[in-house]
Amino acid sequence: MNKRGNTESQGQSADDLRWSSAELSETSIRRQLRSEAFQHPTTLFPLGLAGLSLLLLLDISPFQIPALAAIILLITSLIAAACSFFWLYSIRHDLEYAKIVQGIMALQGQETREAGQAEIKKIRETLQAGFNGIDFEAGLKALTDLHYEYEQLQLVLYQQNEAVAMSVTHIPGLVEETYREGLNVLANGLQLSRAIHPLNKGRLEEEIVEIEKEVETLRKDEGQERRVKLREEKVASHRELLEMISQQQYQSDELLFQCNRCEASLSRTRIELASLQAGSSATSVNSVTQSLRSTINQAKEVQEELKRLGF
Image (cartoon, rainbow, N blue to C red):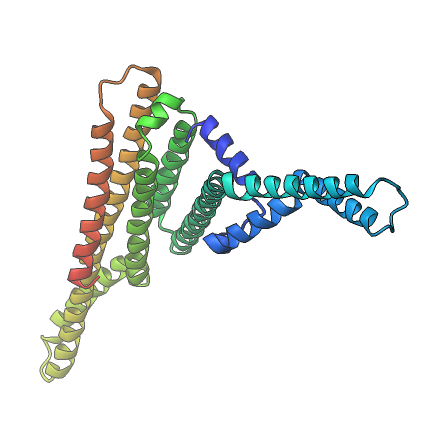
């Protein structure tokens, strides 16, 4: 979003702060518009004059004017008040109603964006704490790089001039979706890493070597068949664990790679948008859009495949 659009949105939202999202209904807006039309100075002033003229007619006013003049003042004031109310409520109603609805929709959009940003921040902080908890440096680096590119791209989007901003109105949504998918694949990667973190691959491999040596020694003695069998079963169990660790490490690496793809896609988008701003880009907006969508779709496919495999 460019600076002008952001300023206009804030100004429009400020004009309609008296409305809440729950009040976005024709009945409530009509009621409020009717009340405002009645309380408007151009309506209240002639109504005040009408009240004064009525007091004159009832001869309870400190002022003294002829009854005919009081009647004329009463009728004129009531007509003026009715005209003011009719103009404010009926004729201007459609324009005012549209303006209010637009303002409320802008507020709703702002609330949605703020809620989305708060959710993203919470996910990022959870991932950071999780990766720190298992000392997973590769995950931390992927998260840091992804977030850096997202923030830099937000700056570029904010600084777009009006002409470029109008041509890339759909890009911010794709950018956020790409960032979210990057966070999603990292969350899945964290889940896999947590599962294999307690299993020390190096320790298991060392134990296998030691047990196999012990088995060779036991086989030289008669009557050790039972002990040999137990140790062979332990080796088989360790090998099974090692295979599971290798599979999950592979899947974790694949998820990190998808996060890197999201990061790279955001980086390319930032560079292309900056080039568009400078008028030196040979790449079309469509190619930027297709690149983002391709990255999003591939990240989703990898996660769906993991679900099918039971991860």
